[in-house]
Length: 105
Image (tube, rainbow, N blue to C red; front, side):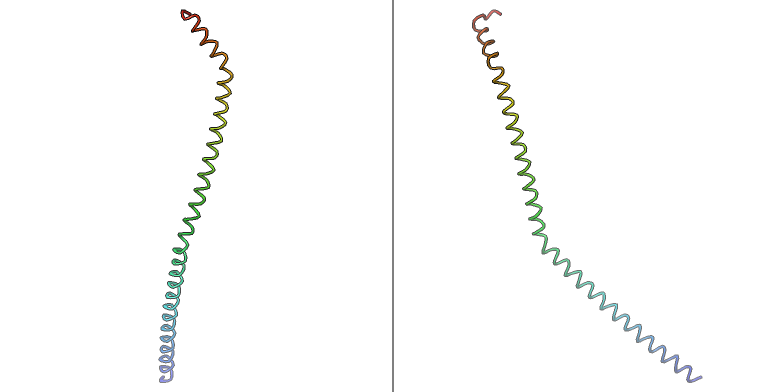
């Protein structure tokens, strides 16, 4: 019986050591994970200015492209209006001359 009790006590001591080792391993794993997370966060924070610059550059490019497109449309419309005015110029001059010559009409 003493031998059985001794084996049980030895098994309990070994189990306690295993449990303590598991707790120590767990604590180490948690610490390692926290360090890795902090390092990743620092890398991300360090990249924020580059990301910000990239977004600004792309936004600026889109704005320049939009301005160029609006200018192109404006120029096209200006040419259309100028052509329409030139097409109607003779008609407008004739009407104005008619008003001057015959104001009662």
